[in-house]
Amino acid sequence: MWERFSYYGMRGILIFYLTQHLLFEQGAASSQYGSYTSLVYLLPLVGGILADRYLGARKAVVFGALLLTAGHLTMAYEGKPATQNLVYAGQTYAVDIQGRMETRATKLVIGGQKYGFGPAADGGLAIKDLPASAPLPAVLPKGSYKMETHQDPLGVNAFYLAVSLIIMGVGFLKPNISSVVGQLYPQGDPRRDSGFTLYYYGVNLGAFWASVLCAVLGQSFGWWAGFGLAGVGMALGLVVFVIGKPLLQGKGESPDPELLTKPLFGPINRERLIYLCGLLGVGGVWLLVPHKDIVGTALKLSSAASALFILWILVFLCKTWVERQRMMLAVILVLGAVVFFTLFEQAGTSLNLFAATNVDMTITRHATSFLGIPMGSAEQLAAAGIHPGSAFGWIDTGIGPAQTQSFNAGFILIFAPVFAAMWAWLGKHNFAANPTLTFGLGLIQVGLGFLVVVWGAGLADSAFRMPLMMLGLLYLLHTTGELFLSPVGMSEITKLSMPTVVSFMMAVWFLASSVAQFVGGAIAAKMGNETIGGQVLDPKLALETSLHGFNQLGWGGVICGGVFILLSFLIRGWSHQVKTEAHAEIEA
Image 1 (cartoon, rainbow, N blue to C red):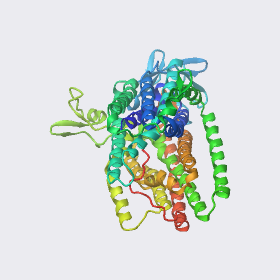
Image 2 (cartoon, one colour; image 1 turned 60 degrees about the vertical axis):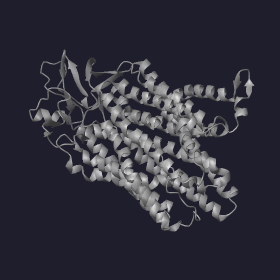
Image 3 (cartoon, rainbow, N blue to C red; image 1 turned 90 degrees about the horizontal axis):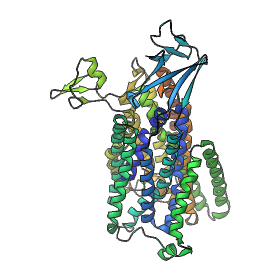
Image 4 (spheres, helix red, strand yellow; image 1 turned 180 degrees about the horizontal axis):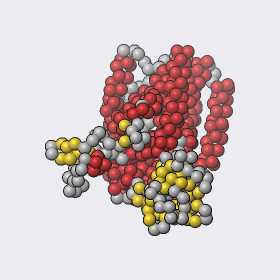
């Protein structure tokens, strides 16, 4: 729970930290986010192998938690905020920046006075209420000016160090914490399903509250507070895990303790060597994270090598047609997962930025009262002439864009029991879920989530903001799509793969998740908009750009889902009676 608390707490505000504190352009920030998350999903492959062969799951979890805590607490070091200047005709004008996230306000400082700005008709910059005597015109044509950004090198490097610690920490913790849960219950134990249900609920409970609380602290007190709370949460989780060691009853320990502690050279044994290599690996990741092109090239080469090896397995290693069909079905499911999570993981980038610019983040339509207490957003109360005496004298019905990241976890907490009961009922009545069909249904739903927003474009107000309900419907469909697809994910891969290549196919599954994160970041980068001081210059253009991108993503998901459904009738026998457990792993 606390690991997911720390991860989702950071994820909710990371894109805003990049675009508002470090003043990355939206496209560059989305690409950087994709590079980071792709490595987050790739490194667990290494951590899982080291735990299985040497460390054991428990020690890997502890080491990973220590790295995660250090990483999140390092994120709490903000450094100096980046600054920005407008350069026109050889003269420089400072950009005044105040607030964070939805309270962000930026103005141009000209002649000692602050002026608002907006888009010009030709795509340039229009400065509001600028007097005729000002040293520059009120409308700056497109291409006649440029923005200069100055970042604090120490703050930027601290950020890259922090995410490197987090990447390495997740690599050791993520694949092994669920392994510990699984080892607590032997196969056939009737408590196994309940144990995984509790684990899954804890994961999503942590994700829900992290998205709410870290966003509130980040906006109200500073980025350091939001990221710091994520670190405190991870530290609490580590303390609970260490104190609760006796409850593990010896599970999750090293498969060969003597080999682990046997000296290799001097005081260095295998355990210490693994920890040392993990720390040195943080330095390697730190050098890699800023260079998305290198990360992308590495993923391409890894994907190509994996594809060639799978081809070799199909041609030479598979001895029967049954084995080949099962392996081919596993590959098809991996490809479906890439498409699904490429769309699904827009949540942390394009959907977060869309919420900040083009969604009315108020729950109520106008100011009202509840039990005599004023209720509404600050904007609505001001419009109604209501001025509460203190922050506790009214009910705020507005939420922050980062808090929308809690929608998915909240919907899972509500609907996961319903879906679990549905899968159990289907299994009891011998209606075993066809994995290709359920993948197709999941893909259609994640696509429909985007299309619902596109089809609701006419509901946008004069400020080019859509109702919060439309974003809620998007996340609802994304969640139900996840609940169709995830329960058959890794479980099917392990069952369909030949015993001799199960570990390799699990590596391919993690690689596919990593590729999806990277591609998702690249797609989000295409939907980036021009900003000044971290504030979008043209909300109308931003809405049009987002809806165009969502339309393409939506139809892409629906078409891929339709292809999978058609395939399900053609290849329904390829699993050859491999059954899927109702409680199967759900990627959190």
